[in-house]
Amino acid sequence: MPKFIVTYVRVVDYLSTKFGRMAMYLIFVMIATLLLDAVTRNVVNYPLSWCIEMAQFTMTAYYIVGGPYSMQLDSHVRMDLLYSRFSPVNQARLDCCTAVFLVFYLVCLLVGSISSTMYAIEYDQHKFSMWNPSMIPIKLIMVFGITLMLLQAFSTFFKDLAKARGRALS
Image (cartoon, rainbow, N blue to C red; front, side, top):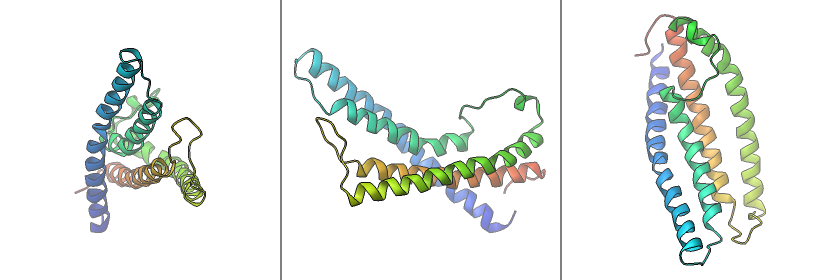
């Protein structure tokens, strides 16, 4: 593989690892938020209106930013009827073919998320609830996570292409 592709794969894998490991800790933020909600609602009898939505936003950031790291580690869920019966080279070839569909899907998601984010910024969009939080931060995280996922999809494609050719990406 050309040197610029090898460099691209290393940089994107590094970014996915760093942001994915940071996102792992968001689960503790979500747990703490839900625990706070449970204590204030049931023990103190003073329910906080923002806890559930904050937990939802945290969970969204957790899986959107953590997704590329999951893809890099090949730990995502896969519908496997025949795939495991193939040799590693044939698995890589199949992954190269299906990467086209993944990239198309991610590009559509990215275009939609950018449009949605621009709308949220232009109209100062807020969620209609008692807490009434701004939607801009979560939509910016959505654009960032989908962009990182698209970059990781290309990185994975290049690694699979090298494997399908019988060469390791070095």
